[in-house]
Length: 197
Image (cartoon, rainbow, N blue to C red):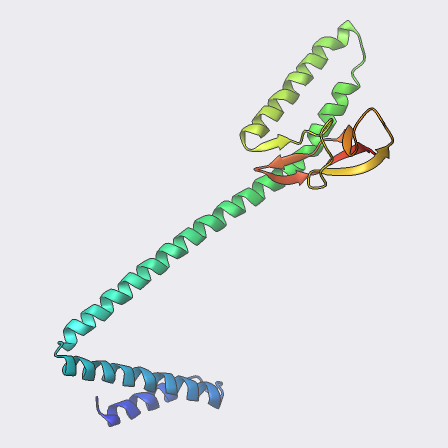
C-alpha cells in the first residue's frame, strides 16, 4: 500500500469524526487508523517474504477471527444464562419472603385453636393446608431451619434472649420464637431463638 493511500485514509478518518471530539481523541483515532494500515501493509510484506499467498493469509486471519467470535459468543451465552438463573432465584426468594408472614399466621392460628370437638375438624383442615403449603415450598427449595436442641449458629439464628440453664449445654438453642427459612441453602430469614448460657 502506498503512503499516499495511507495518508488519504488517515485524513478520511479525521474528516468523518464528529466535530465535538477533542484534538486528542482525533489524534488517537488517526494513529489507530495509521497503525491498522501499517499492520495490513506489514502482513502483506511478510506474506511476500515467506512465500505465502496474501489470500491464504487473509483466509487464515478470517478463520482465526471467526473462532474468537464464536468463543466470545459462547461466553456471552453462558454469562446470560447464569444471570437469568440468578434473576429467577432473586424473584423466587422475594416471593418466599412475602409468604413467610402467612406461614407464621398459620402456626399461630393452629396453636390458639381451643380444645373441643366442634373445633377439631376445623383445626385438622387448617393443619392439612399448613402442611401442604410447607410441602410445596420445600419442593421448590424452601426449608425451615431446625434449631431447638442444636448449637447456636449466628449464620442461621438470631438470639433475642439468653437463659441460664445447667441441664442444657452452653450455646444450645432452647426455644424458637419465630422459625427461620432457607431457599436453596441461602438464608431467607434467621430463626429468632432463646439460647442457654
